Amino acid sequence: PQTMRTVTDSKQFLFGVAVRPSDLLDPKDSKLVQDNFNILVAENIMKLQYLRPTESFWNWSDPDKLVQFAESNKMKLRGHTFVWHNQNPPFISNLTDKEKAIQVLKETITQVLTRYKGKFYEYDVCNEIIDDNGQLRNSIWMKTIGRDYIDMAFQTARAADPSVKLILNDYNNEYAGTVKGDAFYQLVKDLVDRNIPIDGVGFQLHVMAEQPIREDALRANIKRFKDLGLSVSFTEVDVRIKLPVTPEKEAAQEKIYMDLLRIALEERVSSFVLWGYTDAYSWIPGTFAGYGSAHPFTKDKTPKPVYEKMKQLI
Ligand code: XIL
Figure 1 (cartoon, rainbow, N blue to C red):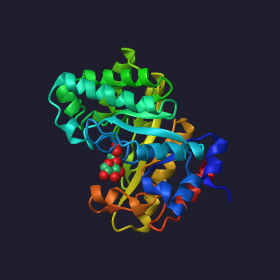
Figure 2: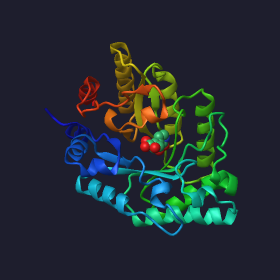
Figure 3: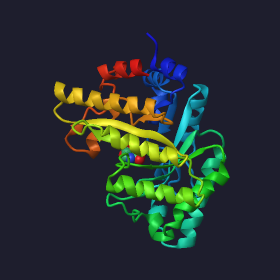
Figure 4: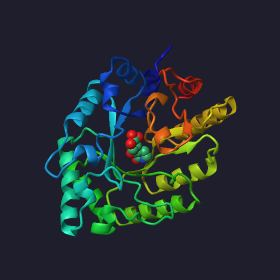
């Protein structure tokens, strides 16, 4: 049988996964990653907490290995992420001075995109900057710089590497006609109207098996971003199940994975990236108490039935 990688490469469909350093080192895991995915994103190591833990220390070694692994396996890369309210080092969380914050923001983006110029296909310049009420989140960047941080981040990224697609990424932003989905759209439209260099949006799509995909609202949302001239990526897909797992819940999960994939293919989304492939290393149980079994490979790293169906569909 063909590997997923053979299928996605032949269709030129970018199908990827978030990886940890050990996914590239462990022989079994790295083989699995090579056989299944043609675009990778770091689950954690390019977050500023790890990448720039202090103002003067940069931890390039893990990202360098990721870039090297992707190159030697002819994979593309997503970057994740610069501006975020989580997983920042103390020297950023403790910023108070506006000019200092601007300097740190610009310097961080410029250093990374200069070192990796031409290496990334797309990059989450800003992540989760809208809160659940549809307001700009009161992050450290918002508090110190004000809303101009968004323009600055995208402009700095464009100047440092004109070849990387610049993305605004978020969760619960996938449906037109919701408070957050519409606020996200309005923010993006305003950026486009003002010629701020943004190339696409990311829908994380951390979803639940008990909530069916609202296909019309998702397609309408994709369409309105396409109409702005932007790409849409599905950036962090997982479908968590409220434990215990039952055959009914697994069927519901399967339907959601298949719906998302079918819509992605039909609407030509730019990339479809799983937030982890196996339940063995999942972030879900630690974040959503009582949930699990969210990924298309089991704890022993064998594909679930849905995975074969996904391969057939592509
Ligand atoms: C998660 C990682 O998977 C965890 O390992 C980490 O402890 C916390 O962050 N939205 C995002 C991702 O943009 O960066 C988050 O990743 C999941 C939610």
